[in-house]
Structure formats: structure tokens, C-alpha cells
Length: 196
Image (spheres, rainbow, N blue to C red):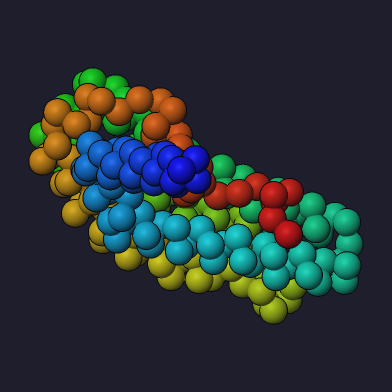
């Protein structure tokens, strides 16, 4: 009898957890759509490729001088920070009442602003990290795959930000910790020291 009550209690707990998870997912339908958009997916893919180039470099870094390693590391960290600043900008804008209104009313204009930020980050990446990486490895590792993906990221930005036009009420519920957890942490570029 006792075992049956434990099993019943366990099933009730699992059911309530499942219902709670479903409620959370539907409560923020728009944010879920944005996080699953091609814009975010391509951003994540570009980030993974940039991080992979660091891992590839670290496997052969013993071949290079400390000065060269530092140049590549500094170029990567500065570039990663540029891309991270874009995600932080989106987060801050989603939390700011006036910026939310702008995103809702002028999604295309907002997408163009983010496009400009991405292009500046791309140019910085090419000048700072990629140039050092190619120089030090004599072209064995190029870091180019990130640059190839950026036009796709930009192309999908317009559609991604239009999602927010449909969810005005939901956007008011966003808070700092939620956007940090779901937007920033999964999408941010890791620093050099975080990558193996």
C-alpha cells in the first residue's frame, strides 16, 4: 500500500512538472519563436565555427611563439566581445519600453540596425582575429566559416524581428534574468579560456 502511494505521488509530481514546463513554453511563445528563428540558429552556427577555429588552433599552438599565441587570443577575445555586445543590445532593447515600441513599429529598421552591428563585428573579426590566425598558422586555419555565414544571419534578421510585432503583450513580461538565461547564455561567444 505504501509503495502504491509513493508511486502515485511520484506520478503526480512528474505530471505537475510537465504541465509547468508546457505552461512556461506557451507563456512565451514569441520569445520561443525568436530563439528558434533562422537568425538565432545561424548566429549560433557562426559562433560554433569561430569557437571551433580556436579549438583547432589550440591543438597546434605549441608550434608558435607566445607572442603569436597572444596575438591570436587577443584578436579572438576582442571579436567575441563584439558579437556578444550585439546579443546584449538585443536583450537591453527588449527590456526598454521605448526600444520595444520601436522594434514593434519598425521591425525592418531595427533589423537594419542589427545588420549594421553585425557587419561592424564581421569587419572587426576579419581584421583582428582572422588576419592574425591566418598569419600565425600560415593559412592552415583561416576562421573563414564564420564570415561565410554572416550574410545568412543578416538575411534572416528581418524575419526574426518581425515576430515581435505579433507579441506586444508578451514582450512586457520579459525580464533581465529570463533573457539572460534564454538569449544570452546559450548564444554568447565563449572566451578563449573557456574553449579547449
